[in-house]
Image (cartoon, rainbow, N blue to C red; front, side):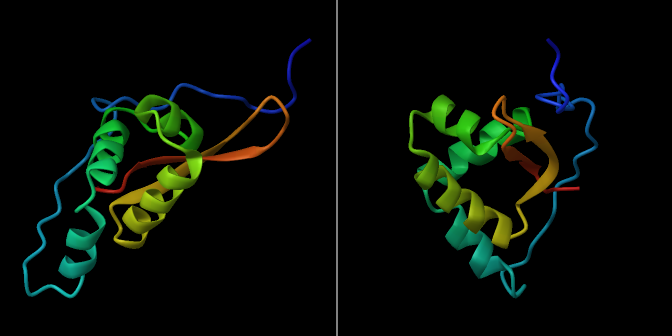
Amino acid sequence: MSSLLPLKPAPDTVSDRELEPRLVGFEDESAEQILSAVTSTTARRILDQLYVEPTTVSDIAAELDSSVQNVSYHLNRLQDADLVEVIETWYSEQGREMDVRSCGVD
């Protein structure tokens, strides 16, 4: 039986996305928030994973062998610093919405 909900469509790969680096000066008001968000090794590993392939919190947690709560905390900080963005929504087999995040560097 097929599902009525779109489960996990294939996300764009790095080569399909047109990502441009964003230059931020130390005097820029967002610099402190960005630097604070990336001080954690976990946050940097999350960014690295999202650069390769957009994915969900639970998939990141499984890949990093971390808790969903820990990954969510770092993702929220990265999103507040405009380094990560929600690009689409997938649905679990139970019908729960799952935000798909990607590096927000366009």
